[in-house]
Length: 389
Image (cartoon, rainbow, N blue to C red):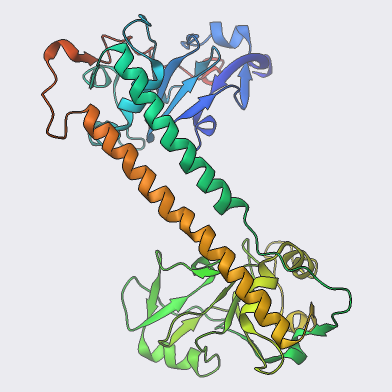
């Protein structure tokens, strides 16, 4: 019912715990409910600084609510009843180690779920409060480094300072070839004779092989005969949601392409392929190219439009200088991926130490707390909209 919603009481759902968060800090929720909605459901208000855990369908996302909230039926909520015994930040961190256990314990048909009774069987080590504070401070320090590195990766874009004296040239006249892959989808599998590259494999400035497909040699020969891709060519997504992303082909082996990806090969004495890829991925380049898009259900850039697209074309030596500078920047940016990996390992090592998975003294039974000792998770709440039917 309409008067159940949008009345100011914070109502947490899975959307408030994004998968990208290690532990979410909830200071607001996307949806709110009314006093009536709360009263006519089985939901209960959860006090601030509790720990909420998704335990239905998507299992194991963890958050600390910094404001009082109610939750839908997809959560178990841990209320810290004695703040002198446990910090919510520590409890949330300790629970991250139990996510595999939660998933293994989940049962159900359409939606896997952990029952309240099963959830209460979970145990976490509970050291003295001062030790908890030290652990939280250590891991939060690591997480700040990770967050900073992610910010660099998320916000870096190659920038090309366009000089007003540079001529604007048509891509078709600057390229040796502009072509695309097959317009007929061959049968593809996770194994086969030849790699089959589609738009899902082209990312900004790199190729992603985590979800690669293969096709038969026969199908490959038919596709490759009309679209022979070379090492160093620019692969450019021209169809679909990710239109506008470009990457250099680093593969030395033959592969086949779907038509959603175009191939551009600059004339060797006119256009440096890496400069072209960097320009296409720059804010200006992407904006200029996407302004030519047509289509509603499926957005696309046709080969005709790609051929007539204009790009700033400085002398080849200038292009090469720009490429060298951007590649140096990218080497520094790429180092952030290693930084993330290292500090994630530090977090894992700290949590392993907490759980006695190193050569440390075993935790006594006095220092073990069950989730039922900390708080009893709130009953699984009935969604207000369902209660109103």
